[in-house]
Length: 458
Ligand code: GLN
Image (cartoon, rainbow, N blue to C red; front, side, top):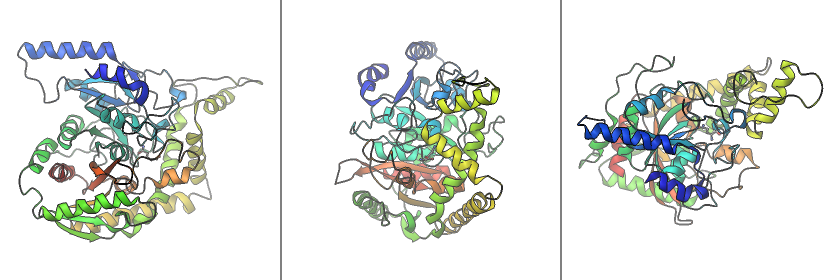
């Protein structure tokens, strides 16, 4: 049914870069046969799942949205993909994304943008717009994304989906093509909080192949979500509204603020203790992020050297030296946003500028972590709109990188502090009838709280 749906709508939506039709059917039949033979299978056995193209899959190309990896089939699966297969989920294919996960609209994909199923003229968010659009268009019930500065939560918000960035280190990054290693996290996208929790339970847990993987024993997120569905689940829960990103500031759409305020009222009516908290350093989060991320990305992307992966282009004239082949390949293979960030990142890391830019950004990062710590002394969870606006029009911000970056103001703080965040739909903005998302954040390791509060609100 999902493959039929993909065939029917993906020509318009373009959520997928690759669909593994035959293999998906083969896997589904094998799972069915085992079930028929009486084997007890996991909760998500036989459920199709779409996989963001940033994740390595040994049986499908993995391009990270870039021409430089066009057609590259990795020799191994990312740990999260291996866990999907071990739990008998059925990978349907690979989803579209901004090149190397740099962007908030999927317009930076080298393979053309994804369209928002709510309005095909609008962006599905980014960088994981393909995963969110696939779920919102009913092409897949579940998807995996990656979130470095909001790439799971913002696409979920603008497509009316649920998306979760787990605690940093909670889910393995092994085989996730690195953008900024200190920020990247893989997580679920779905249409309900419980569905996201079930998928979270499949992918989470220690992985010796990822040096930053936590050895924490995680409780069941599905149980946490089920708790949220009980009466009085919100009674006495202390909820903090983060003043700096609560929707009053510049750049927030009125309808987003309106739905957010209504949600605050709902929480209060359900017995939660809602208070306002201040996180003064959040004001500098976007600026700090857009130094730290390019710095780490410029280093990570150095591996695309024309020798080890994908594309190789010879210089148009002159001697064919390894250095000139590398330059020609990177020139042809990387798109403009990737080049912009490599230049920004290498500049920020240069001798003489390191302290002024990268060092200062790292200090801001510490201040943001302290703001979170102070806030979580007073409350159990923090809330804000998941994105400042609903889905904007394709083309609207493509020539204005700063406007695109500012769209991440609500999501970036959680990445800088490593804390988990969940986005879920809270209705449509009255001015454009497009989905609005709520963001819930919890202290590190307390991902379960997101699911309880999220499921209670659903
Ligand atoms: N929009 C952010 C950026 O462009 C998000 C990236 C991400 O989470 N992968 O960096």
